[in-house]
Image (cartoon, one colour):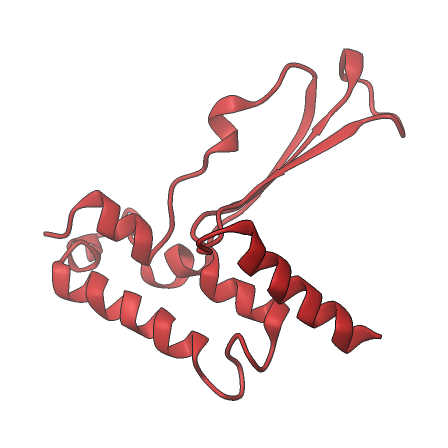
Length: 133
């Protein structure tokens, strides 16, 4: 069986923000990682398959190969290419004083992307911004 770190790398890490909701939270939204949704364990009888080392390695290779694809990879579609680097669910929280919705409410977002540093992410976002101009 593959260890939990390898499974998290292939499918996605568990939600992080859900366990740390700030006081005054009035809304919480979580969009699961498409990798865990489509290919990961789902509490069914075939979950044992998704825990095997070979299956986890195959999913990791699939993600890497799809990111390099000339038509839908990171170089072709930089922002859509972030999907291949998504290693967690996307979580969004709306926080307001007194739990009353208002224009002064704060929005927190949490997601994990597989970049070595923020400069790499900045380069991808800058490249996309230049394409929009």
